[in-house]
Length: 243
Picture (tube, rainbow, N blue to C red):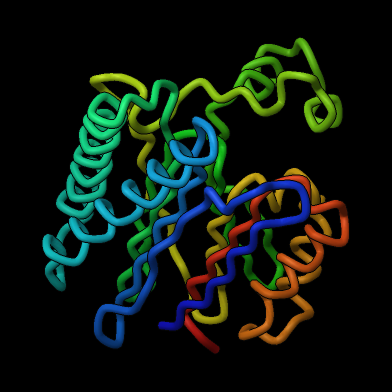
């Protein structure tokens, strides 16, 4: 199990409000957490980092090898709920209204991955002959696509494309989307913020993952987003089962 990561401020922001925590837990397990903060320079930075820190800390202290799917699911859900409370409390304490963050998280053990998300950061799975987005954005434009009001192509340039319908830290309760997937030898999970997906088409992301040495993929993805304008902070984290 290997983990690779890269985060960049991009070309248009004053600070990097993205945050990630990731690593290996022994030889057969890895985790990753990626957040995209919102609420201004100060609020966004605080929210993203606090959420990433809280979720990672809960994973590292709560995970035990051989946990059942339901136990891992509960661990991730509780971790994000705790992060929601932490961000909401900090926003009230520091008087930072509107502070919040997206989150995507994955815990992978011996070919089985449990994933969780809130907002429009994403998780993809790449295999030799497969490329699949595992998360569905909690966003206004995704709702419009789902209800047939706009096409996926229209969503990329829609004026409301940056409005999300769920976030961590904006209310007392947070609804966490949970799922599971396999991760076979040679396959890759990519966790990323919309600073990547908003600038680089899925097909180009897939090409980079397939054709780039694994240790250079995150750097290459970040460079591609910057080459396309770097309109937002950019974060990419890879988890791979290896060859």
